[in-house]
Length: 567
Image (cartoon, rainbow, N blue to C red):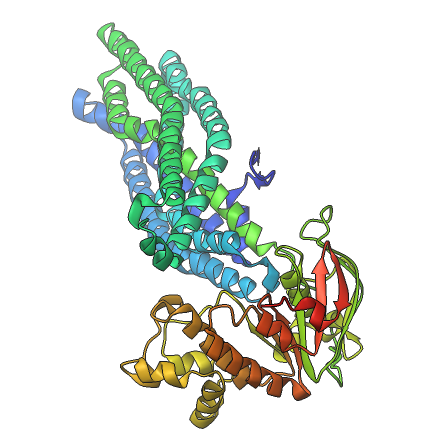
């Protein structure tokens, strides 16, 4: 079975078991688990058939051989043993062999992905994969497989046996097989249409929740807290509508199959009752069919729902595989380390989509010993250019050289080691101020941390905090203001003392006094470093030793006096 995702064009591979083995990166034992459930289901069906001589002995007093009793007991014992072994193994397989390994592989993969891949959408994908999708897969071994296999295989085994005992009754029971196939195909077709739309709605909802949490100060100050924010309310409404649509769409094939199954078993019982009345069917076969109806009708009617769950497992595996198959940046076998840190862009071209170039034929030189400012209109490609220098992505055409060596030959690890970044949207970990700064260089002494914090003008912030340097900053730094978060990030970068420093609008949330003080520190820092600053504010541009104007995908050097707007 091959299923096409109408939203993304992704092709889901129908063998979910193979997909799990691939996603886990090793054998999980899930195939052996299926074999145990199959054996248990067949043995249960055989037990029903082998009970016929037992019922004939009980109801009619017919003779019974010891081997018949032994086979009946053996089938029950072996069916129970196989089923319980499967259930016991399924917990370990689901937790350790499948989910734990998949989570570890996603975590390991994320650490190797290009930094440019990460945005709000990718964050939601990773979050959904490691929570909802893994949770979905955890039900496969202990719930979905035993329910689906037992619900179909046990009645099928009995139906085939009954076909040789009472052909008409066997045919009525076997009608369930094509009926199940039709309903499962119908259900899958419904899911092909609904599930991608539901996942898209879930993704939008996850993004809206993340944005809502991050924007709480802004939303509350504008009176849009809770569900008052239109974007959040729309995401919730869309998710609710998709959930209702899915339930309605999935309910039709399930109800049809339940009705058809009930009618088939009712027909089989009616035929058996008539035949028993005419004495062409004995009481033993009648009793077995009644037991079969009681024991198997309900699990069989749930088969379509279990097949829906199997599709969801397949879709969950596909979502995991989409992350695991994201191309990593090629890394050199023997990294070449530069001897200097001047940066040269040679005929650089880049676009997030090959058909839509952001930068084209860019040539520029950025030298150590001063601050190089990138300025220009919003959306012109300034941040993209800075991230290409730090190898968040690889260029489509041309080269980015550090010290004359292509960053692709240096390798991502070495480029990261020689670079520090301070972004406009500062991320802080939910720990203390001191530990957030220490992340810049974990082996730094406390005095080195305090010196970096002093350079970033954090002293006055610390004086206001109840626990000083040991004050928690909250999730994403929520307990600090925007300017305070920027100063923590600047202190972190200064502590690392990397030869290349990239700053993206780092003074945008600072008052004039602190902006001037930090620019003075950065000018001093840049004396023997390569410092690149994206800026719009006049003071930041005036602090530059070189200004590059970025516009319409091109870069040109301009006079500082031309770049500074008169106040």
